Image (cartoon, rainbow, N blue to C red; front, side, top):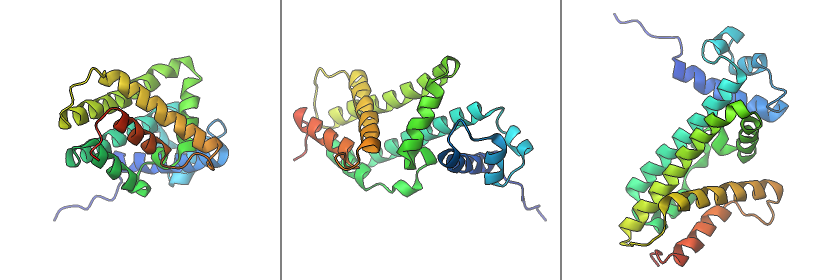
Amino acid sequence: MSRVRTRPTRDDTCEKLFEAAARVFEEQGIGGASIEAIAAAAGFSRGAFYSNFKSKDELIIAMIEDHVAQSIRRSLDLLAKHKSLADFIDALKTMDRSQQDPLGRSPLLHMEMILFVARAEKRRPDLAKRLRARRKLVADIVETTLKNNGKNQSLNPTWAGAILLALEDGFRLHRLIDPETTPADSFLRAIGDLQRGMGISSS
């Protein structure tokens, strides 16, 4: 008779720590949150935390890395199903955000964690690595949608990816500051306007 595994896997433990850390960070702030508080919120001991992460900084980097990896996976899955840019944007608009990771669900936490990492010079290479991964994703989407629409423009996908990513982060920040004049779909609406300006609208 096979034994039933009752201990959580590392992935299970990390996911619970990510969710717990997000709650603690939102309640206490990233700087004020202790490892003990995060472990307790996840239902683990301090030792369980250290068996997965050496420090709070390492946990935060792992959360950002997980967020980027999930974002890339979701976007590529959508791109495989929706070849035109218009269909891809529509799919993004209707995507179930409740299934996203903590950083995807909370723009404020997302921005706070990026700033926390950016404030320390030694952490910045890790953040830069994830930023480049996000830029490459957007660049790949731009290049793929241009090809799918039969366009052979001089637009540089890498530069376009950097522009679009900065635009997304800008709208995210503006919505946190002034949600009344910055609708939740501002970024996607801007993409639609750019799409038509680039002449790749399906309408």
